[in-house]
Image (cartoon, rainbow, N blue to C red; front, side, top):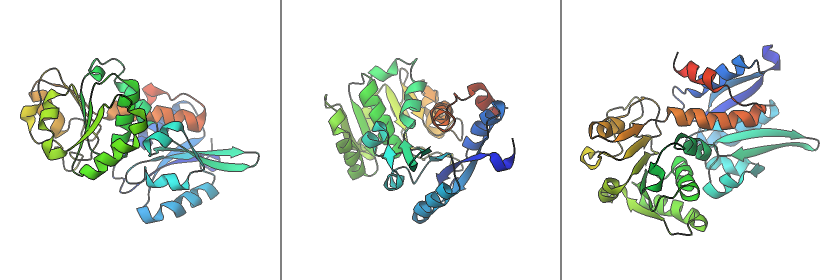
Length: 283
């Protein structure tokens, strides 16, 4: 396999910092001897359109999309999956070449990746609190709403208007009126009553590891699962506080792998070598 024949997959975001995605994708490409290479591609918001056009001209295979582009990227897509249409955010782009030209297809593998990590858990039929109101929060809320029996799903955010907009966007799927929103400062009771708490915000991510999206550790207790989608550090301040209070905890590394595997298959038509990918993250 020569560099000239490699198909490029990129990670679009800004800033990117130290992402684990290149390591896990490239490990699987190498293990399967596939002619792909995955590269970080930091792009400022005002440069997103021109960056996508440049990549299309270069014949890229696709991309992952992270903050702050998951919603703004939609205007540059030719087609999307039903999940993207429902969630209003995309994290995966696939450049599809057909007889009449190419099209840029958008998907959201965050939903499937998130649900895959909870398939053996009994917490999904309990009340859920989602911290945050961005693209990841939309994916989690959609997954919980359409694939679990959670009796109530509360979106708690610093910006109540954004949380309400999220709920309104999913209202067509909320036949049981399970979704509600709260200002973050008023979410204490919901946190205490929840069986599942999911942080979708960047609060607590390296290098600001001493911060937590929920600064009241006394609200955590045994019987809860406190799930932080952050994977760097592997145990966030919120997870530490929850563990010390007797709650179960989960970090974002496994979701990163599961959503990556769903993207990988769309670019390559090949299942990801999960063990090679996981080994690259835990050498």
